Amino acid sequence: MSEETVNVPVTAERINPRLESYKQFWRRLAKNKAAVIGGCLILFIIIMAFVGPWIITTFTDYRPNQTDITNKLAGPSAAHWFGTDNFGRDIFTRVIFGTKLTLYVGFFSVFIGGIIGVIFGIVAGYYGGRIDTVIMRLMDVLLAFPGILLALAIVAVLGGSLTNVIIAVGIFSVPAFARVVRGSTLSVRKLEYIDAVRALGASDFRIIFKHILPNIMSPIIVQASLRIATAILTGAGLAFLGLGAQPPRPEWGAMLNEGRPFMYEAGHVALFPGLMIVLVVLAFNIFGDGVRDALDPKMKK
Amino acid sequence: MTKYIIRRLLQTIPVLLGVTILVFSLMHLVPGDPAQIVAGEGASEQTVNNIRERLGLNESIPVQYGKFLTNALQGDLGSSVRSGRPVMDEIGSRFWVTVELAFYSTIVAVLLGLIAGIVSAVRHYTLTDTSIMVVALFGLSMPNFWFGLLLIQWFAIGNWMPEWLEFIKMRPSGWGDEWRQVILPVLTLGTGGAAIIARMTRSSMLEVIEQDYIRTARAKGVSERLVTYRHALKNALIPVVTVVGLEFGGFLGGAVLTETIFAINGMGRLTIDAIRTRDFPVVQGTVLVISVIFVLVNLLVDISYRFLNKRIDLN
Image 1: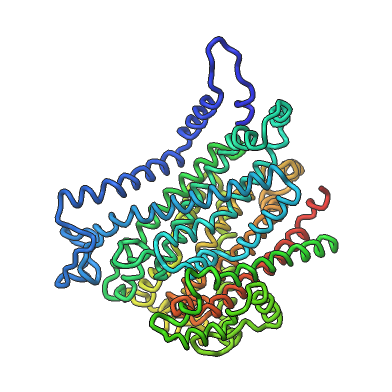
Image 2: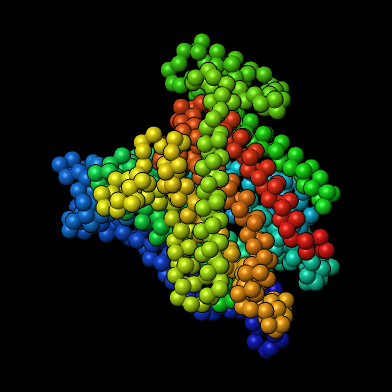
């Protein structure tokens, strides 16, 4: 990637080197089947999340919190595609309304974690020395809490809510970004063009944001899409433990938690929200794998 | 090598200190007055003051941390606000339940993952390879608590189960008395880990197979079998070792969910119960214990990695 940005072809017309490298990125991405499939799935899910509820409220009488006790725990049927839950609420409607919440957790937490992590990583990699040591030790401390435990501890302190889950999962994502970005920054920092811009008198701030950041975007994008998958799983886990979005919000993890006592009599209650989580996480994993293969020429197709 | 071990040990100290600081801060990051929250709404001022006194919240924060650290070093993690028992006693035998669960899950993950990964790599770009990788991708994308629920549905309450599988049926008591009860929770945790190990083993094997020394071995007439299992596998496994430590730790954390589903009385469930009842000393205790085990396991893994991968020494 960096070479393309450096070797600006000298022609009469002005060619924007960054635009060219983005074009090439898209071309390579479009050639990767996994990335395309994953991308389409993600697009479909986003549309479902934002258009779905509108379609349901406009064209049907189904509402996510509308109860019908006489019809509780009914299996899938023409009237209730995914069946009904213990309050007789239509699970399909709730699943569609819950898509947004799951995407919020995935996107916002990774956005927060990504920004903090990228800043930490770039600063550590660019300045090195003591700053690097302090930042990376701090990341080691965050990584010392295995799996869901860090997010769990944070939510335990802040209290269970969707916002707090986003904050907790965001903090949980910081070290992953910091490590990747630090590594990439280290390798870019040594390149000659950085010496050149520095010799021209560019400030550290300018070098970091104008010259390093654009060249380490690919690992950041890969990390982001894979982290969204992890973030959604972690957020769903917290909600399942009753520490996320509170009932009656149709968050998928919370729905699984609510349906758990009834799964002995009505298996479908615990089935569909879980399947939806798999679908969304799968989409981001496929996309992330695809983007990584497309961006990393060393990987075999 | 000794030098490396000493350096690595020294590096662990600030991380462990950081862990204690973070765990200690948990109580102080609570929005509002921690004593009030622990006491619950509507508690009398007297109760709140008692709790504040008992948790030592009257002293300055550095003094509190100093006490927390010195006590923790002596194995004293304070006492539960709810039961009044020392946190160490609350953890007690639950410690081994969770460690065992994580340990067996690691074994399942490594065995399943290695077999799947090796088969995939040996038959790369065939239908077998693709199928295994698709399954692995699903395993990676599945919330393990949901998989656990499905397993309970299929095996514990499903009526279709063939007679010879009856023995897996869950007993409500959960963990410990019989090894059979261990199967479902371990599968729940282990399969997700197996997916990661399978993917890792496959890509690592494929990378190794491309290397010059493998070509040399083939050129010398070494059989394909020997090349795969003797020459390639040995080096391909090295990067996989690093994941094992992470997986073990992930299982310790994941136990929070698995123990909740299967009603296993381990540290994970203790943590969740403590969070629900706002019993912060217990939350701090379990989180600290789990993290310290994780850090130590990773230390061991790093050292063994170094030991296995002699090439690092040359650089």
